[in-house]
Length: 114
Image (tube, rainbow, N blue to C red; front, top):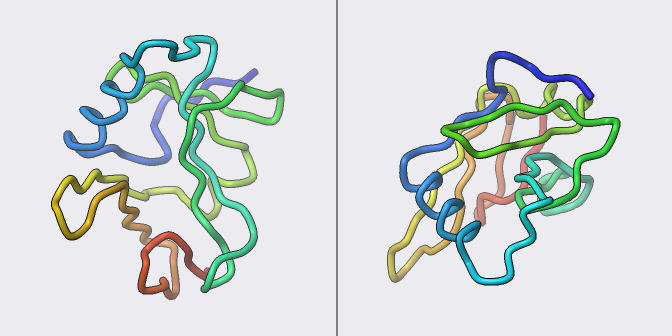
C-alpha cells in the first residue's frame, strides 16, 4: 500500500457533501473507500469510475477532506488534476468531471479521450 501526499484529483464542496451523505446512509459498508479511476469504453474511448470499493495492492491511497480515496497507480496519467463536482439541479443531476488531460469529451461528460 502506498500513500501519496498530494491528491491527484480534487472534489468541490458539492461533491464532498454528496459523498459524505452517501457514506452516512444506513447500511453503508465502512470498509469501502471512494475509488476514482477510468476504464475502457464510452463514447470517447475511456469512462470515469467513481464509486465505493475495497482497496487493492495496485492502489495509491489519499484523503480529501477526511474522505478516504484510492486510485489505481496507472490511472493517474489520465486523471491527474481532474476536478469532480456534484450537480443537484432538476435538469442535470450527478457527478461531473473536469479533466485537463482529456483531448475530447462526449456530450454526457462521463467519457473522454486522451
